[in-house]
Image (tube, rainbow over all chains, first blue to last red):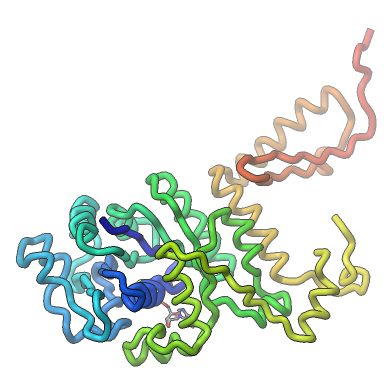
Length: 264
Length: 89
Ligand SMILES: Nc1ncnc2c1ncn2[C@@H]1O[C@H](COP(=O)(O)OP(=O)(O)OP(=O)(O)O)[C@@H](O)[C@H]1O
Ligand SMILES: [Mg+2]
């Protein structure tokens, strides 16, 4: 019996789809069986971010409408063993799906996969309800800015209310330089505000953008900071104890700045 | 509040500290489902009661909600001038 984890946020555009694609791939690279589920009905992206868009034939809506078997709707990723995608319908909208239908799909998938990662749409409405319906755990993605964090807190409240536990945080697009010069909150600030456990920090990485352009998740290349961050997060999800490295800038200048400001 | 070196040198506070401060306040209010109207009403009613016991200026009262661990604390700062006579004859 695998785990169903919803990847969600509150504010849009903070990196849910990027996180789902990379963690799904990373977990498969670690030998797990994984299905990534796009729950963003009507605005599907997970297929194109993963480079699988040309191979999608059926969607979760076809499964719900009994047009095809669930197993047949799963698109196999040929680059790594054990990774499949369940795409969202692009021509339907969020109201065409019921939370119970999503829940049924997730509980079926969980019987023969180690991980079911559900990519949620932004917001607190129907799309979020559908995406989280079958989830036992949640990953909340946020960037270190005021709007994303405020909205993350709202989502955390809703997840807690739904009894989803644990809820872990991925802090995305973190910039050591900006933290160093005092214009971005650091992880301690964000955790102090949100009061949940940190699963990992993903730095701002140009490689995320170029790998998305190519449809090849960043984790296939193991040198970039973003790729390594996602691999570490995936290992933590499998239960390994991997410390979260301090990404803050430790240059000469920032040490001086830190010395001057450490009492604030 | 400790006075930091930066303040002594007259520099502006870091924008990340301001962001954190603002977020803490607004998120506490979000969580408790408390809005500005509620806070204003509480402010007025509290001031009315307190005025029976001591002398202060209503405008000098500062009220805020804070989170400490898992609980919330209502902090009211009321600079008073003097107590009214507690047992007037
Ligand atoms: N760590 C990162 N470094 C650089 N760019 C990033 C990073 N994470 C995400 N991005 C970029 O941010 C944009 C939004 O990412 P993504 O689509 O994953 O967000 P989302 O939360 O799924 O958005 P939506 O709410 O619309 O579904 C993309 O262009 C992506 O390439
Ligand atoms: Mg998305």
